[in-house]
Length: 187
Image (cartoon, rainbow, N blue to C red; front, side):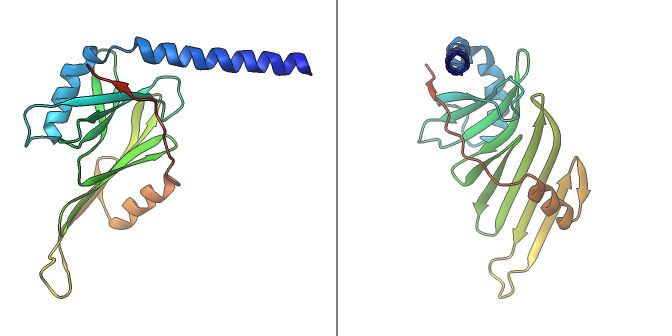
């Protein structure tokens, strides 16, 4: 029994060392141009991106990490990307008005851009690729007594749909999870 415990400890320690080495060998600059292109689409108000740090996280537990990038506090944005061979694909993007949500095998954001305007988007991953997605946009007239909806739409897997289908998609994601990544400074 003691021999089995020792083997498990050695295997766990080796696994942790391998993960740490993988993190240290990651070359952020290899993906910088692709990250700039993706992030500037969402940060259209600011043509210079000032990165603070990044973390590698494995949302879908396939052994291939996703990239989580944060900006300096003054810009206040963050993005989660799938790493493709020489580029990245945005999965979720949040600015100072957004919340980033993590689920087992999924990531999303909820945005409250201005009073009466909200958006949310979610991506489900398998083998570091998006296999399902959902998006919603809602505008409410905050100046009316009834706060009636002025404009709304819902998309699930690239098709316009009803609110109930979007809600069902989000419900199937399950509970949010807390991710405590190891952050690496970007030079």
